[in-house]
Amino acid sequence: MLYKDLPCERRSDEWESSEFGAYFIGIPFGYTFTPDKAGWDLPRTLCGKTERRMKMSKKEKKVMKLVVAFALAFGIVPSAYGMHIMEGYLPVGYCIAWGAICVPFLAAGFFSIRKRLKENRKTITILAMSGAFIFVISSLKIPSVTGSCSHMTGTGLGALLFGPSAVSILGMIVLIFQAILLAHGGLTTLGANTFSMAIAGPFVSFGIYKLLKMLKVNKLVSIFLAAMIGDLFTYCVTAIQLALAYPSETGGVFASAAKFLGVFAPTQLPLAIIEGILTTVIIITLETYALPELKAIGFSKEVQ
Image (tube, rainbow, N blue to C red; front, top):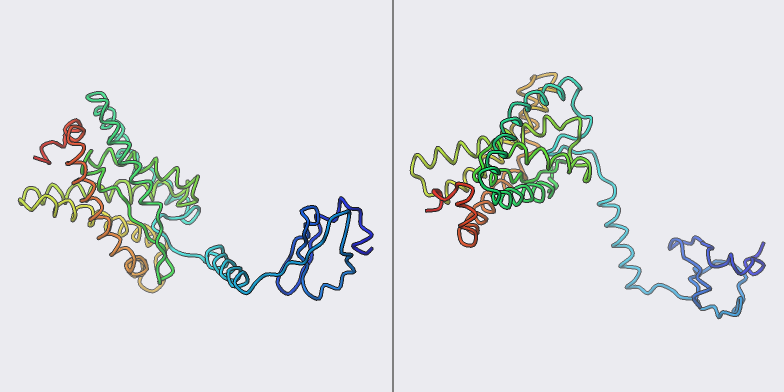
């Protein structure tokens, strides 16, 4: 059947392919997109509407090629390692074991947050800000030349303000939302990811900060180093978790851990430095504009 023999109500939904792709025929709108060399016997007026042929300009073709290239580059994602261990990657036994290890830390975090909120309800403002900071900053995945993707953790800030136990709860909540909404991490690997990002990293950040404070190191330098080293330790723990689950055939766990560390390092090292700077800047900002809130959470002695 020729196009001119089709009923009018069907002509607006026809598609045709050419060397430039598919072009939509929109006669009801007063124009059609028809490719060159189509070979269709189309009249100039159909159903009382005038047909006009419209071609893509050179500039529009270049834009179209760029859009297609962008879609291919970012729409087809190769398999890669990431700071969050992805869904289904760990054996079931490891998932259960890491989840069990997290339980006492999560219990301590729950009681820590409940105690703070009972003492002062205003604490929830800074607590929510710390959780939001973790969610946003750990969702920004940066690709690496090694085929991995890395990201900052953001847990150092909460650890310095509320202690590492409270951050275990904040981090777990963030990881649940990221696994469900962003496909970042996974529910089966929630225990392993919680331990590395929401427990190990924050405890190291808190410990480094307290140690440097005892050594009377400059406060801002202490904040920077605590956040940076906590970030790096998180990625070290993730590498060890992966190595334990998948040891190398030749070198065992140590060789596998070295491999995973090498995969993460090119992007994680500069990201850790950036996280240290961001954490320092945020605390400086809080000291300037939210000193009463800092006093409310018991951080006032740190900002004198």
